[in-house]
Structures are given as C-alpha cells and as structure tokens.
Amino acid sequence: MEIQETDTLLECPWCGVRHFLDAGHARYILPHRKIAGELIHVPYLRIKGSLFTCDYTGVHHRIIDTTVNATGMNVLPPTLGVRPQAMKLQFASDSIDTTYLKHRMKWQDAINHAAPAPHRKMQPVLHQEWIGETLATIYQPLILQDSIVLDGVTGDKLAKLPKGKDIFAPIRMANLGWHPRMLPTLCPNCGWDMDSDKTSIIHCCQNCDTAWRHQNGQFQPVGFATVMSSQPGAIYLPFWRMHGDFAGIELKSLADFIRRTNIPRVIKPEWQDEPLAFFCPAFKIRPKIFLRVASQLTAAQQPVTEEHVMPGQATSVSLPAAEAEEAIKLILAHTAVAKGNIIPLLPEISLTRIDTTLLFLPFVDNGYELCQEELNIVINKQILAWGQKL
Figure 1 (tube, rainbow, N blue to C red):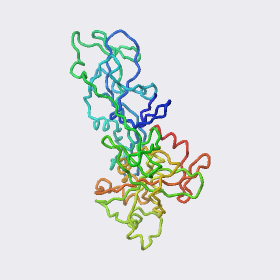
Figure 2 (cartoon, helix red, strand yellow):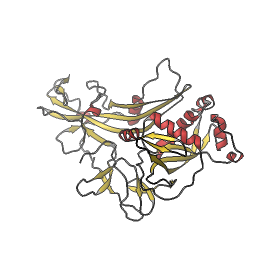
Figure 3 (cartoon, helix red, strand yellow):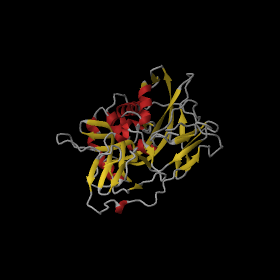
Figure 4 (cartoon, rainbow, N blue to C red):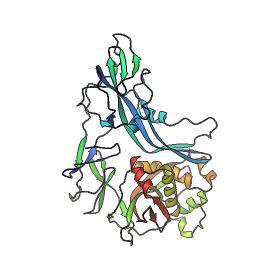
C-alpha cells in the first residue's frame, strides 16, 4: 500500500477493509544508496501549509513547504531543499538496520523559523496565522565511514569528524515505539461502515445520519446540518459555521458586523438581534480562494433552511475545526471594506467563546466549476482537487 502524507484512512485494495490511521506524529525517510558504512538517519522538521499575514495594507498569504534541521548540528545542511517534494518518501520504522537521531528543536521553534522574516520596508505585522499546516519529520540518511560523513542520497562528502569522536552518540535513539494504531471506520452509534475518503478527518454515517471525528483514540460526535437542494445530482461541500463572543471589538450582532466592516448592505431592524456567524471552508484550498469563499459566505449571512440529514454526495472534510477558528480574524479583516475600522484592532481582538457546526452546502457541477447559485459562489474543480495535496 502507498500512503500519502495527507492520508488519514488505510484501505486495503484487495478486500476493501478500511481503518482510520492514527499514526500520531508522521515520520518519513528519504531513500538511500547502498554504500559501505554505518547508516544513520537525521531528523528534519517539515512544515507545509498556508501562512496568512495581516498588516495595515490588508491580508497577505503564501504557501510554504520547508524543512528545518532538528539537530542543530552545523556539519549538516540547514534544510533538505526540494528533496521531500521531488523524492518518494517511505514510512520510518524499526525494520531498517539504521540508527535514528533525536530532535533537539521544538515544533513551535521550527514553525517560527519557517515563517519568513518581514522585510525592512514592509508594514508591521499585526496578526499572523498558519492555516491547514501539516507537520512531519523527514529523516535524511547519512553514511558514516570512520570519520567521514557522506550524504546517503547522493553519496557526496558532507563533513569530516574529529578522529575517534562520535558526535551523534548523545542523540542516538534506542527505543522507537512508532507503531501506528488502527481504528475501524464503523459507526459508534449503529455499527454501519462510515463513508469517508483517504484525506477526510470527519467520518459520516449515512445509515443513522451522524458525523464523527477522531479524538483520544476514539470517535467523538460532530454537530452538523445540511442545506438540501432541489437540484438532482447536487454536490455538497462542507463548511465550518462559527458563532463566538469577541473581546476588544463590539461584534455581537449582524448589524454590528455590517457597521464595522462597511459592507454595502442596508441594515434591517431585526439584524440588531441577529447573531453573527463566520463561515470557513472545511477543506483545504489555495489561500486566495480560501479567503474569497470564506468572505463571500460570511458577508452574505443569508438565512437557510437546514435539515439534520447526511447528504449523499459530500466531499471530504480535511480542515479541522480548530484551524477554522484560527481563521476568524483573517476572515474579518479580509471581508471588511473599511479595513481601517478592523485591521488596526487585530492585536487586541480575541474570542472568548466559539461554537462550531459543520454545514453542508449544495453546489451544482457545470463541468468546470462547482456553483452555489443562491449565494453566487463559484469554485473551480481543479483547484478543489489540487487543495487535497496541501
């Protein structure tokens, strides 16, 4: 079986049995050459995701895929370059006759290192968030020949060590304990085989209309609703709908939101008591499209008729609710027409409470795009498929 870095489901191609793969922290190795000497695998921390930065000019974004040397040893390259993207990775395990080295760097330090430093001429950063980041350890193979260290991928000489001194001894790992756990994708409520694809973090049961997420070694229920379509063959895309209490800004109702953001809409009297909801795609997609779709849905705030029915043709949920909650301030800043009313306040704005629900919205497939006709939202199908690799 071949498992991609974003896969959460293990399905046997022969018998079709499916299990949720609880591998914990993902670890991979680069292929190595068969060269005489001792084989050692050195850890590099890989950070891949969308980085959003807010300054006085607006919300900026970029996709980052980088690696950081986790040992801190200067004799080793600071990064793996394009090797993780260009080479075929394998799961790290104790079945290989090698020595794995320990981390010396914390994940948060690696994430901070991966974020590019602002240029001198840039505006000061008021808010920054990683959305949909994937963290993994990539092990670079080394060949140790007496005091010579060779690159296990190319065979090139990397460094010469002091004779008789093993600089890797303090960080050699003895016990790995990396065995992944398998959880059958059977509905905890009715025992039915749940529907989900390899990248989904939410598992849906069509038999009893329930949704589940993995937490602490078991499946926990997820609240959801569906806006049913009268169109035959509609495709349902998942979104996180979030209600929260703000500190640092007055945003208690839909009327407050329209006044603050200066969206060109006439405020109706009943909107003074209408609770404000933020919407965020529950699937990974390019950051530019992510902000556009989230802003369109949040700005629309149109009442919909919901049902507690699991739709038949629903795409997978690949963005956790916690990531969507981190995007609320980004969506607020991007949606605002009068950005001066919002962006300077971002450092002081915080959320004291958040209620999150999964909402399935119907889209019509016109061949090239998926269209939500009532809200006038269009998503290119190729971009949607490409986002599954983020």
